[in-house]
Structures are given as C-alpha cells and as structure tokens.
Image (cartoon, rainbow, N blue to C red; front, side, top):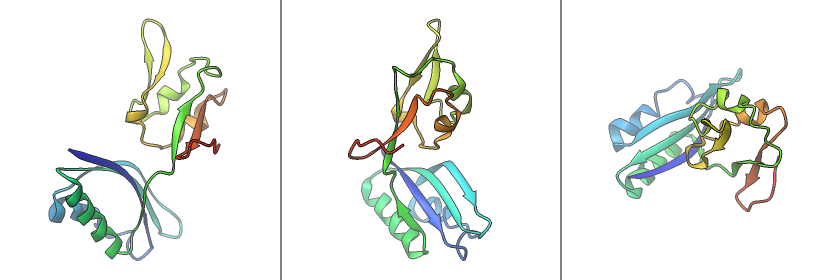
Length: 143
C-alpha cells in the first residue's frame, strides 16, 4: 500500500466543491483528513494522508487535483522532540489528534512516534517548555 501526506490549497472558486471526494470515486484513492480549514477569504486548506494500491494511481489523483486548480505540496518540515527540554508533563499528548505523542506507562514518559505525526503543529503551541520543534527536510532547524 502506497501512502503519502499532502497539503492541498484550494482557491475560492474550488473551496466549496467536493473535489477531494472524487479521489475515491474516480481514482480509487483513500484519504484521511488530518487538518482542514476555510479562511475568511473562502480559500481552503487541507492536509491529507492519501493511500492507494500503487504510485501510479496516486499520481493520477494528484494530476486531477492540479487540473481543478488545487495547489498540491508536500510537508517541508518534520516535528522533533528535544529530549533534554521535555519535562514529560503530557500537555502535548492531550492535543495530538493522531496519538503520535503518548504517555508510556508506568514510566509516565512522553513518547513521540514520528511515523504517526500529521504535522498539525498543535504540540508546538501547547508545549510549555518548547520541547517540540520543526526541522526542514534538510534538517536545519526552522522553529
């Protein structure tokens, strides 16, 4: 099974249309919505995990999205956890929608599973000691 996280930005003319649903109907792709919003300017923004049988089907679906005027990109950064700063308070685990951050019991230690991370960045805002941060793909710190 091929799976990839993509970021979709919809122009106002496309934000209200069921474009993403067509990925299932026309291209046999499955998707998991990790983040979605529509701005006051009626522009849409979604972070999806798209899964399918192979890369060819994925590429056809992405081509369809681009033909509809959707800007498609991939995450340029990754979340990291600074083990030295982390106090294991668990605040980040309460806001993590994918359980990428969880408390290991009985040790009461906060564990970060990068493979489950949807890049929602809620942990960055929640961590009181700023133990969660961002790296760009070339591993230079960005925030």
